Length: 569
Ligand SMILES: Nc1ncnc2c1ncn2[C@@H]1O[C@H](COP(=O)(O)OP(=O)(O)O)[C@@H](O)[C@H]1O
Ligand SMILES: Cc1ncc(Cc2csc(CCOP(=O)(O)OP(=O)(O)O)c2C)c(N)n1
Ligand SMILES: [Mg+2]
Image 1 (cartoon, rainbow, N blue to C red):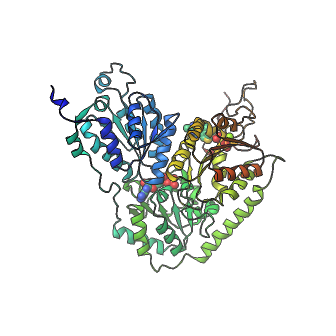
Image 2 (cartoon, rainbow, N blue to C red):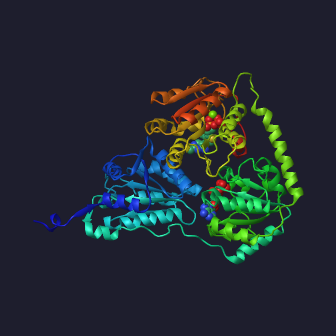
């Protein structure tokens, strides 16, 4: 009898499952298939939660959003080659946003792949992943699984968070090893997200610059939301009296209706300020790269808090770099600013004036039906704003062009990490994955405001939402197309224009097909009532919000980035 039959063995599935649990992973998002279906069944049998999607990109988006909201990496598991590639899109988006996630993919055997012999779903996934994720590792032997998973988690959550790709080679997945040796290898990592303390001299430099400012501004980015230093950030803002400007996913760190919120006066405060404290934001395209008209064509004195040293000076010189984790940097800065006089009353008064003027200009548009009897972005979102103000713990998911810009401007946030949107890339397609990831990790209702084009990228996951009976209410802002729905074909013939969809589409019928609640809303009142009912009932709901097909502008707020023809021929 061979020695093997006498020694108890464990397999790679056991080592993977135990290692994921040792790293605090509870949920896995993905799609089954060769060679991972049995692994998924084993994960469930061992108490792991599995969320089976209809497209791996949406599963990866869910994992990325779960990572952003919890600070633990969301895990997406896929089959090889095409499944891996679909998941990679979500992993790349997570890395671009600085969100921790792990993409686990089955892979063809190394022998065939490296000789390109045409194995089943053969692809060099490790090298395909590398340019698009924070790190990529291949596990070649079952005994390496505990270290590989711990390293993937630590890499994903430490420093600037991002996605890590773990390649599950065929040889490794089919391996076994003695149980005793296996138990000795399994471990729980210590402190995967260590504090990164700032240099005291850097703290003093930053504090001195802020104390000397006449028109200071605090710029809060999604890194500040991710850091979960909510109380200290709020205290820094309120103790100093400095106005704050939240980037879209930092909304709610302090309530949008806070007296120091300069959101509605962005076009005044960016050119007028003199010293800017940047907390977890990048001076990228979303902030005019820190220079030019957006900033009044004057170079500002920037203090930048970031965990990634090489983010400093990425676009413009930073006068006071503060490198470290946001929680540690804010705590140190608060200590150094003790006793600092509140921000200048004239500066605050000027901002308040512009904030109020902006709100007064917006208010009447939130009630007007143009054309009569029709919904547009303003009156529909005005009604939604009033409902969501009553449910601050609802997570809002938002994508589209006009659907995105108008929602960001009109719908206020009151709590941190309650707005998930197209992020740094301005990507379409995060929608349903984000809804599912947020509903799973928060347990709270989720409301999605989706452009009708944006919804189309992940709309099949409506079935997934219903299958898991998640408290998600999807509002499809149906203006009949991309940006609007009444463009005619430039060629004059009767094919649809490049941006129009089938007129009169009824997206609410989709969810009814799967047993969810569908509503066709023609007025702001109908929309408001349906959203409130969905929040209260927690039933998976899809509302087809019928908007004026003429509502919307090309590319929304960033139309200036378009390239137009220079000459006809
Ligand atoms: N815990 C943290 N401590 C310090 N910086 C962080 C932390 N988490 C993320 N960051 C940084 O926050 C920044 C977020 O920037 P970005 O995603 O551009 O935000 P926004 O789009 O809201 O402006 C990134 O440069 C990232 O390195
Ligand atoms: C993955 C990807 N593919 C295409 C695009 C380009 C785009 C930007 S915005 C948009 C859709 C706008 O139409 P929608 O109906 O959603 O919104 P609205 O303005 O309210 O009508 C597209 C296709 C992006 N950003 N990402
Ligand atoms: Mg549209």
